Amino acid sequence: LQAHFAATRRSPFDRLPPGYKCYTDASVHSWGGVLGGKPSTATRGHWGQRHPSGDITLLELRGFRLFVEATTSLRACVLLPYIDNRSVVSALRRWSSPTPRVMDELRLTRQLLDARGISVPWCEWIPTAENVAADDLSRAADPAEYRWSPRLALAAAARWPQLGPTQNW
Image (tube, rainbow, N blue to C red; front, side, top):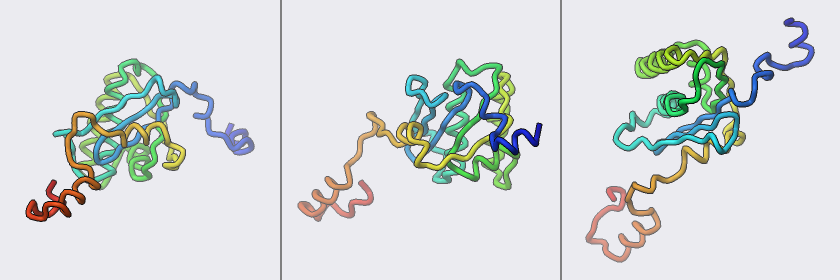
């Protein structure tokens, strides 16, 4: 069997139905994911007050967990995540991390997967340029978030310097 896969240079996971491949991504503002690369399965959310930190590894891992949590149709299946963060891929492959906060998130992820009967036998790294759908979802603006655009903030600071530095806006 190993000789066959070595000869064809294909992973046994390449034969999984495309609906069980998920693509997730996170940014400092939000997270997003799609199942099987289909836009109709898109799920996303904004961190809001739940923003854990500026640690992108933690955000990416939490984004994966929240995607699974939000995709209620995922039950009793094999799931193959494609993630563009090598640290998260490594943590999901080993189910271990030297970082305590990442370990806490791994435990929460494992509990959710076990409760739903979802098996994650492997995790694949995907270049950011190929993770377009999930990347777009994770960078989408929150319509409920109100703040100055950088261009308007600079224009206002030039017009009314008494307002102070723009980085606090």
